Amino acid sequence: MIGGGLLILSFASRWLPDMAWQEAVTTGSLIDKPHVVRELTASFEEALERALDLDESLEMISQVREEMEGP
View 1 (cartoon, rainbow, N blue to C red):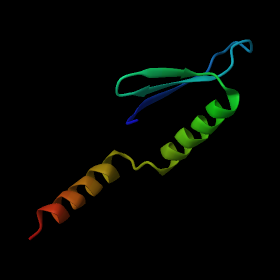
View 2 (view 1 turned 120 degrees about the vertical axis):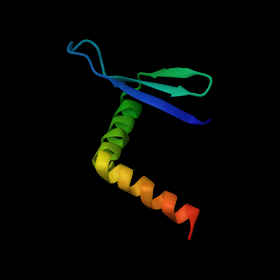
View 3 (view 1 turned 60 degrees about the horizontal axis):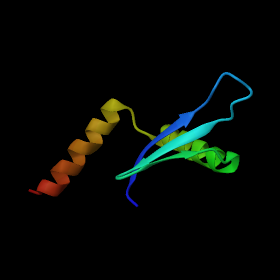
View 4 (view 1 turned 90 degrees about the vertical axis):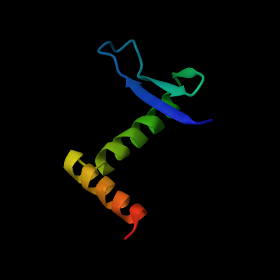
């Protein structure tokens, strides 16, 4: 399955547990199992921590492009 978007759903009401919506190429899934939602949330937060900011991202893309084009 090719991955797609991930949306973590948190609600103000204590009666509604956190959930996740995960999309793939041809389908979407609502995930309500607490342990799976916690794992997805942790993965999502780690990705955010590791992500480069806009300027750093553009610089990396430029460097990779130059490397791929060669001399």
